[in-house]
Image (cartoon, rainbow, N blue to C red; front, side):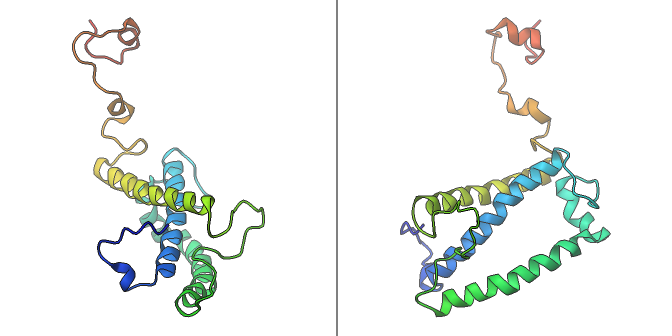
Length: 178
């Protein structure tokens, strides 16, 4: 939420409710995008989607046509729900908080304020950073999950000196074992 950190003084230019709306929208998209990006690289495929890695999926979907089937409903949602909400936040001082679309059929939300709202915002910020990180790492390495140059081997720290555990030598993980 608003923790008073605004070194660029953006809140002087943009109303805080509108900024919160934009942040929540991007956070929710990145939470879904993070899960979807990893799922595709682990083998999950949507019907009619091209058989490519997540890094190349956007370009392949645009080229083959399924992206249009996704773009049209998303554009309609943005036009009929997102734009009116943005205008409401900019013009109505009594507007509902940013991100509150009054749609919670299962009752999971705790409302636009409170502990759950702060958790959603904090986890959403983490998802924004996480998604940008995996896309960058995927582009740099050209590999799928776990987005390292040599696969899972890069996630295991190297063993210095003599291997302390015989189980490591027997597993073939350590190159130091004779």
